[in-house]
Image (cartoon, rainbow, N blue to C red; front, side):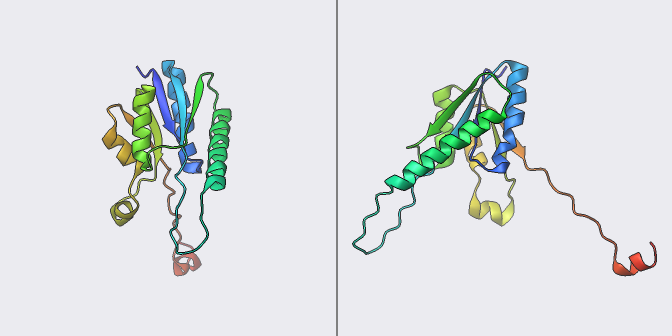
Amino acid sequence: MFEHILVPIDGSSLSALALPVAADLARRYGSSLTLLYVVPPPVVVYAESAYVYDGAEESARARAEGQRILEDARDSLDHPDVQLVRLDDADPRTAQAIADEVVRQGASLVVMSSHGRTGLEHFFLGSVAEGVMRRVDVPVLLVRQPKTSPTRTKHPAAQEAGR
């Protein structure tokens, strides 16, 4: 059913939630599994000064961090066929970079996490997951962070009355 599963990760605990789900599906369907990390482009600040920033050292650190994140994620999985892909010079729009890699890899399923933002927060921050869903022609399984249920506390007067 799903021959090749692509899992975009960013090193956050939220993105790690997608890993066991993807590994379980890969085992069930005999799928190959690709973990994808998109190295963020360097932030360029323009200022009127004599100092010229080339970003090479920062870029090298970002690539090394991306490789470490991929290897740690692979090591956390119990799956024999895991490919690691680190995109160094990808489209700066992360959703587009992921969509491009879905096509390049021939993925038949994308498993990724989502913050589940709504309202103004979604409007201002956007959603990489939503951007991926709009750009690919394969199913996208979103793994959401579990909601924490608020603890119900009794009003102090009710506690005193033993209610």
